[in-house]
Every structure is written in structure tokens, then in C-alpha cells.
Image (tube, rainbow, N blue to C red):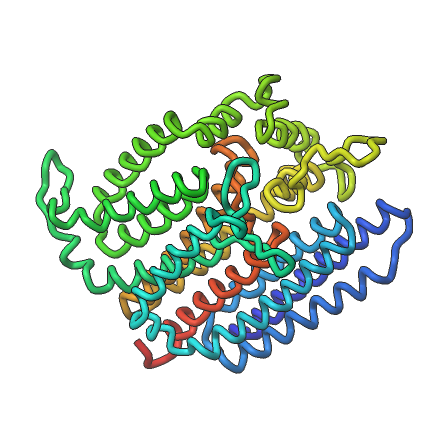
Length: 438
């Protein structure tokens, strides 16, 4: 079977998953199977088919598994958002999905030769870093539980600049390291470890400084780790130097420890992570209320879950409604998935992310030029790290962060930014697989 036909067949499970998910929610809520589930499934399949036709025409050699697995992941998001907050947010999420497809198509058309992005790398990195500061600006900036991740333009839009910046910073690093990787790869061996020349440690120190700056500005360990890990991964791919990774991780750990013990907001988040069931932390404003409740909901899910609509995310009989998980549709959506689909259902979602990351890395391996390799590997790594950061926060592996679960959590900026990311991966893949092109 040809690649594009495999992609077409791969879209069928996505539409079936959406149909079955909505049908289960309808039955749980009204004990009635509505024909709307079939309608929603058909509409979603139609949108995916439109995307497939465009890829077939514009990117005939692109990886055939990336777009279908993104469609399956998006199904999880649409069904879970509808289950949590009803038709209003689900409709908005669907609208963002449509806009994301439009932006995906626009990205492919306008950046057909994506290597032109190298010419504007300093403009891109300047805008990306400037966006990270936006949540700290007066009026526009907005603090949620002590973290600054959202920007709010009154009466217009609320968005997360972090989602946009992650793509821009990876583009910059891929372009910068394409020119400097050979210089950075030099060094001498000390005790069996190749240490980089001191004068070339500048880029690593700059990355560390950016990560620490993000930590200070946003009061977010997770976001800082996501950015720093992604940029460090690109640095490793470019130079093949394990010493960069070791030094980088030690520097990050030291800097994060120092800031966590000297900045009250960060210290409070770390304490809430370490002691979520301590009564003082559970009741504190912005404390461990959500983290502790998320553990209970996930534990109740067991291996097979309680079924869609089965987990209790609101306090029964409360008026007005009191939420066990106030951010169930965003930060805590993974906890709801585990509670209702169980460990097996959540593992299936994580496997979809693994497939997406693996196919992105495959595109990097096949790419014939350094910029393409670094770009694809960096974008794939940032997806993996974002999933790790938010899932790790929900499951208490890491302090809880406000980043979204890609294509699943409710939020327009996340969906739009991730569709741009997917478009760039497919552009790299198409060029890498195209016969006679390197």
C-alpha cells in the first residue's frame, strides 16, 4: 500500500474513536444514544479528509503516520473536553481545530522551502523571547496560581505565548547550530570525558541563562525544563557531545535548586508538589488542592477506568458547583483520562505521542541537510518534553506546570502552535523522502 493510502486508512480509527467517545458520553448523561455522535464523527472525518487531500497534493512524499496519529490524539481532546464542560467548550475546541488545519495549510504553502527561515533566525528568536515576557506585562499579563503563562487582551483573546515561542526558539537553535556545530564539537578528553573548549561554552551558558530567566519570569519549573531540555537536545544532536548534556543538566539542577529556595512562588509550588496531602498545603491558595485530588481520581481509575463520565470531578450536590479539579479541561485533563479510561487508556494516548515523536525523529534521520535534521529532532523533542512535563506534573513526578497536553488540553494557542509544528515536521519529511532531493 502506498504511503498516502496508508495515511488515508489511518484516519478511519480517528473518526471511529470520536464517534464512540461521544456516543459513550451521550449514554452516560441521558441513557440515550443520539445520532449526533455519528454526525460529529462524519464531520471530523470530513475535516481530516480535507487535510489528507491537501497533504496528498502538496506533500506527496511526507510521512504517512504523522497526520493520522495527530487526528487520533485530537479525538481524545475533543471527547474529553465535551465530557468535562459540555457542548460550549467542545464547540470552541472544534473551532480551534478547524483554524489549526487552516494554519497548517498556510504554513505549508508559505514555508514550502522552510530553509528560508534561517535568514530570519535573529528576528525569530527576538520575537520568541519577547513573547515570553508578555505575561509579565501590566494589564495584559495574567497570573494563575502564582505562574505567569497567559496573556489576556481584554475582550479579544487569552493565549499562552509559551506555545508560540517554543517553535521559534527551536528554529533559531537549528539555524544557529548548523553554522557552529563543528566549532562546538571540538575539545579535549579529561578522565574519559570530552570537555568543550571554555570559549565555546557560551551557547550552553546562554541557554542556561534563558532557562533560568524563564523560571524567574514565569515562576514555572516545567516550562523552563521544557525549553531547556529541547534546546539542549538540539545542541547534543548538532555536536554529538555528551558532555554538553551532563554539564547542562547539572547547571539546570543547580540553578533550579537555588531559585526554588530563594523565590517564594517557586518554593511554594515545590512544597505543594512534595507534600500535597499536608492539610496546610491542601487548603492554601494556589496550593496542592488540585494535585492531591488528581491522585485520588487517577487511583480510582485503576487499570480499565470508570468509563466516560464515571469519575467525580465536581463535589456532588454543591451549589454553586465546587470543582475537585478546577482546571480539569486544561492542566488536569490527563488525570480525568486516567480516571475514566484507566491506565490502559492513558497508556494508549501516551503511545500515540510516542509514535508522533518517533516519526518526527525518523524524518530527522532521513533528512539530507543539517538544518532539517536539527529542526525535526528539536521539534520532536519539544513535543516529548511537553508531554513529559504536564503528565509528570499530574502524576507528581515533577512540580505541576501550566503547559498544555498537546492537541488534548483545551486551548486555542496550543492547538494552533502545534499544527504549525506538525506542518514543519511534514515539510522536513517530504523533502527528506523526495527522490533526488537533498
